[in-house]
Length: 110
Image (tube, rainbow, N blue to C red; front, side):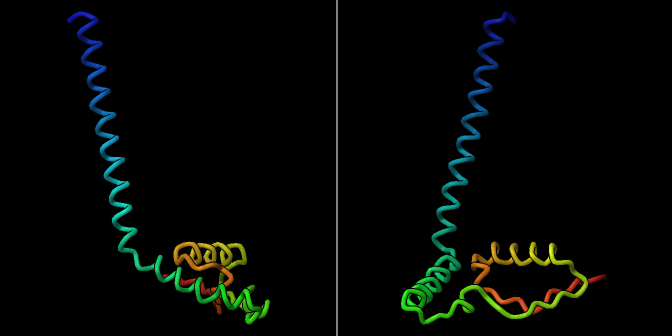
């Protein structure tokens, strides 16, 4: 096999790989769009923000309601770990940290 034939085979191999990757990319984008159409949490978050926004604009909510208040009890967890847990819960639930109220965080041991 001469160098020109080997070069043609390798270029066609690269082409097949990149076309396959492109098809995978497009299928992931299409599936993401389809799933986002059926995602109920996005509509729930929009409804919550629409309910809160007029109250904030008309000053019906005190500053303590926006920032959050109360006492958080930690059982076997340091403050850094508790802050990380609260941030993860806020991110996964798509609810802002100011709207969540944590009463206690407890370390579960097996």
